[in-house]
Image (tube, rainbow, N blue to C red; front, side, top):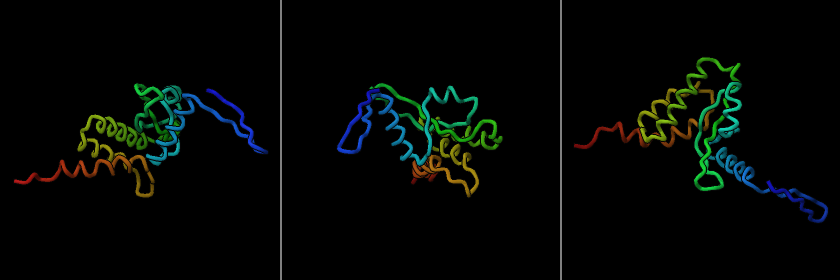
Length: 145
Protein backbone atom coordinates (compact mmCIF):
# COMPACT_ATOMS: atom_id res chain seq x y z
CA UNK A 1 0.00 0.00 0.00
CA UNK A 2 1.22 3.46 -0.82
CA UNK A 3 0.09 6.34 1.36
CA UNK A 4 0.85 10.01 0.95
CA UNK A 5 -0.36 13.00 2.94
CA UNK A 6 -1.88 15.78 0.86
CA UNK A 7 -2.31 19.28 2.17
CA UNK A 8 -4.63 21.69 0.43
CA UNK A 9 -4.84 24.96 2.29
CA UNK A 10 -6.11 24.26 5.78
CA UNK A 11 -7.40 20.76 5.10
CA UNK A 12 -5.28 17.69 4.74
CA UNK A 13 -6.10 14.23 3.49
CA UNK A 14 -4.35 10.95 3.07
CA UNK A 15 -4.11 9.48 -0.42
CA UNK A 16 -3.81 5.69 -0.51
CA UNK A 17 -3.26 3.31 -3.36
CA UNK A 18 -2.42 -0.33 -3.89
CA UNK A 19 -3.92 -3.75 -4.48
CA UNK A 20 -5.68 -4.04 -1.07
CA UNK A 21 -7.27 -0.62 -1.59
CA UNK A 22 -8.43 -1.55 -5.10
CA UNK A 23 -9.85 -4.85 -3.85
CA UNK A 24 -11.70 -3.03 -1.05
CA UNK A 25 -13.15 -0.65 -3.65
CA UNK A 26 -14.43 -3.65 -5.61
CA UNK A 27 -15.95 -5.17 -2.47
CA UNK A 28 -17.81 -1.88 -1.91
CA UNK A 29 -19.13 -1.97 -5.48
CA UNK A 30 -20.33 -5.55 -4.97
CA UNK A 31 -22.04 -4.55 -1.71
CA UNK A 32 -23.91 -1.90 -3.66
CA UNK A 33 -24.82 -4.33 -6.48
CA UNK A 34 -26.09 -7.13 -4.22
CA UNK A 35 -27.54 -4.96 -1.47
CA UNK A 36 -25.38 -6.60 1.19
CA UNK A 37 -23.76 -4.72 4.07
CA UNK A 38 -20.56 -6.64 4.67
CA UNK A 39 -18.52 -8.80 2.33
CA UNK A 40 -15.38 -10.73 3.16
CA UNK A 41 -12.77 -12.44 1.04
CA UNK A 42 -11.72 -16.06 1.00
CA UNK A 43 -8.87 -15.64 3.48
CA UNK A 44 -11.10 -13.93 6.05
CA UNK A 45 -13.79 -16.55 5.47
CA UNK A 46 -11.29 -19.36 6.02
CA UNK A 47 -9.97 -17.77 9.22
CA UNK A 48 -13.41 -16.97 10.66
CA UNK A 49 -15.46 -19.93 9.39
CA UNK A 50 -15.59 -21.57 12.83
CA UNK A 51 -17.00 -18.40 14.39
CA UNK A 52 -19.41 -17.19 11.70
CA UNK A 53 -21.97 -18.54 9.28
CA UNK A 54 -21.46 -17.01 5.84
CA UNK A 55 -22.59 -17.65 2.30
CA UNK A 56 -20.90 -17.18 -1.06
CA UNK A 57 -22.05 -14.22 -3.10
CA UNK A 58 -19.90 -14.00 -6.22
CA UNK A 59 -16.39 -13.62 -7.55
CA UNK A 60 -14.58 -10.32 -8.03
CA UNK A 61 -11.62 -9.92 -10.29
CA UNK A 62 -8.35 -8.92 -8.73
CA UNK A 63 -5.99 -6.23 -9.91
CA UNK A 64 -4.54 -8.78 -12.32
CA UNK A 65 -7.30 -9.84 -14.69
CA UNK A 66 -6.46 -13.53 -14.08
CA UNK A 67 -7.07 -13.27 -10.32
CA UNK A 68 -10.56 -14.10 -9.07
CA UNK A 69 -11.53 -13.71 -5.44
CA UNK A 70 -14.63 -15.37 -4.05
CA UNK A 71 -16.58 -13.09 -1.75
CA UNK A 72 -18.83 -14.13 1.11
CA UNK A 73 -21.52 -12.44 3.16
CA UNK A 74 -21.37 -13.06 6.93
CA UNK A 75 -24.86 -13.84 8.22
CA UNK A 76 -24.74 -14.90 11.87
CA UNK A 77 -22.34 -15.77 14.62
CA UNK A 78 -22.01 -19.55 14.56
CA UNK A 79 -23.00 -19.79 18.23
CA UNK A 80 -26.29 -17.95 17.51
CA UNK A 81 -27.22 -19.69 14.25
CA UNK A 82 -30.26 -21.95 14.49
CA UNK A 83 -30.70 -25.11 12.38
CA UNK A 84 -33.13 -23.30 10.05
CA UNK A 85 -30.48 -20.59 9.48
CA UNK A 86 -27.96 -23.24 8.46
CA UNK A 87 -30.51 -24.93 6.17
CA UNK A 88 -31.30 -21.61 4.45
CA UNK A 89 -27.59 -20.83 4.08
CA UNK A 90 -27.00 -24.28 2.60
CA UNK A 91 -29.86 -23.83 0.10
CA UNK A 92 -28.48 -20.43 -0.92
CA UNK A 93 -25.00 -21.95 -1.29
CA UNK A 94 -26.39 -24.75 -3.49
CA UNK A 95 -28.28 -22.14 -5.51
CA UNK A 96 -25.07 -20.20 -6.16
CA UNK A 97 -23.24 -23.36 -7.25
CA UNK A 98 -26.09 -24.36 -9.58
CA UNK A 99 -26.29 -20.80 -10.92
CA UNK A 100 -22.59 -20.88 -11.77
CA UNK A 101 -23.20 -24.18 -13.58
CA UNK A 102 -26.08 -22.54 -15.53
CA UNK A 103 -28.58 -25.02 -14.13
CA UNK A 104 -31.21 -22.30 -13.90
CA UNK A 105 -34.32 -24.23 -12.81
CA UNK A 106 -32.47 -26.13 -10.08
CA UNK A 107 -30.79 -22.93 -8.88
CA UNK A 108 -34.15 -21.16 -8.73
CA UNK A 109 -35.59 -23.99 -6.63
CA UNK A 110 -32.69 -23.85 -4.18
CA UNK A 111 -32.94 -20.07 -3.87
CA UNK A 112 -36.67 -20.42 -3.16
CA UNK A 113 -35.80 -22.81 -0.30
CA UNK A 114 -33.43 -20.16 1.09
CA UNK A 115 -36.26 -17.68 1.69
CA UNK A 116 -36.89 -16.64 5.27
CA UNK A 117 -40.06 -15.20 6.74
CA UNK A 118 -41.94 -12.46 4.90
CA UNK A 119 -40.57 -9.85 7.33
CA UNK A 120 -36.97 -10.67 6.50
CA UNK A 121 -35.26 -8.51 3.92
CA UNK A 122 -32.62 -10.45 1.98
CA UNK A 123 -31.32 -8.31 -0.91
CA UNK A 124 -28.70 -10.82 -2.19
CA UNK A 125 -31.35 -13.56 -2.36
CA UNK A 126 -33.74 -11.18 -4.14
CA UNK A 127 -30.95 -10.29 -6.57
CA UNK A 128 -30.49 -13.91 -7.62
CA UNK A 129 -34.24 -14.61 -7.76
CA UNK A 130 -34.79 -11.56 -10.01
CA UNK A 131 -32.04 -12.77 -12.32
CA UNK A 132 -33.39 -16.30 -12.44
CA UNK A 133 -37.16 -15.74 -12.69
CA UNK A 134 -37.20 -15.11 -16.46
CA UNK A 135 -34.89 -18.08 -17.07
CA UNK A 136 -36.84 -20.41 -14.78
CA UNK A 137 -40.14 -19.39 -16.39
CA UNK A 138 -38.78 -20.12 -19.87
CA UNK A 139 -37.73 -23.58 -18.73
CA UNK A 140 -41.13 -24.42 -17.22
CA UNK A 141 -43.35 -23.11 -20.01
CA UNK A 142 -44.87 -25.66 -22.33
CA UNK A 143 -43.07 -25.44 -25.66
CA UNK A 144 -45.23 -24.41 -28.64
CA UNK A 145 -46.38 -27.24 -30.89
